[in-house]
Length: 262
Image 1 (cartoon, rainbow, N blue to C red):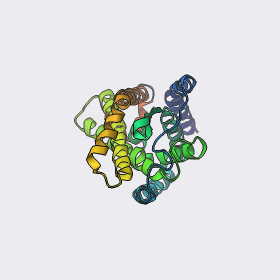
Image 2 (image 1 turned 90 degrees about the vertical axis):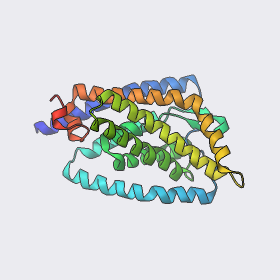
Image 3 (image 1 turned 135 degrees about the horizontal axis):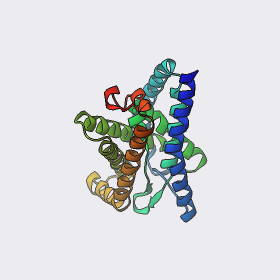
């Protein structure tokens, strides 16, 4: 009974730490300006390229489902946490800054923090759910480009964030710095991949590199500061969880027991 109450309290704490500040920022952004586009929009990619990105994304989604089923059978509290993280990623990635010259827009991703807390496999599922809901109900992104958006934000963002965090922590780098760099690199890696996807899909008979360079450069004015912002948010979330509930970070294998002040 006590362990169940502890899990509920832990989930409420994570909700307060992750959701409320982001929801406030989200409301402010949408009251300041309208969002016209997000991710790679519907119709931007040719059908053959859209199918290719779906083909890459599907095995990761299937493995994520397998991983979730396996872990949740041993820990019933995992699924509510995954749902909570899906809400976090949904809110973070609903902060759009249009980039007209690139045919898409720039925004934080949130897969850095979900990759750190849940691992990259389940983080791909979290991002996929958020992207699907946005495509269906908010006209952000698109169904035909869903595979490409999952590859860039869900797969690349989650893997880069997770690997960066684990690599830095292996060298005893401070939690705040590791969290910051994980969020920063996850964000920038997402937009690097998005630039590759866009340039590959719309180049036609033109050379790849000139178009890729133009798209990547178009993201720099917005994504450079947004990447820093996402790094700061990721670091803040991880550090706050460490201060309030280090046992949860141990449970989610973010920290080793000897690293946590429980």
